[in-house]
Length: 127
Image (cartoon, rainbow, N blue to C red; front, side):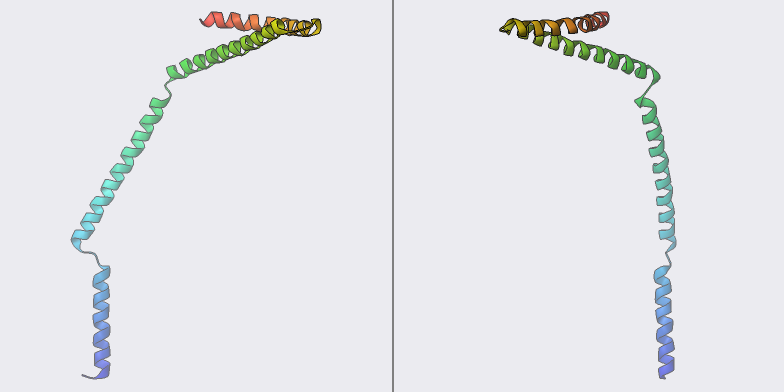
């Protein structure tokens, strides 16, 4: 065999080997097509599931209930804070030594009284 014939024979074998490696068998093509279909189904189901979750998260009735509950929570918290301040100033008044300290605590109680009464009125409404 001549050198040129050997080179051409080797080149032809390499091309054949490479072309068969890049070509997929009929079975592999079918399997890949099936996998792609399954992937599309999964993608559609996941998007449907996400859409259903969005609907479940916030029905219109729940939004109204949540809004009312948060308003009530705010009223209760405001009342508790003002009550705590009033209790603190009352304790300061009771423990105060001297006329100046008693008058200062008394003035603070007077300042908080209208705010306390308004908060108590709101609190009693929701009770």
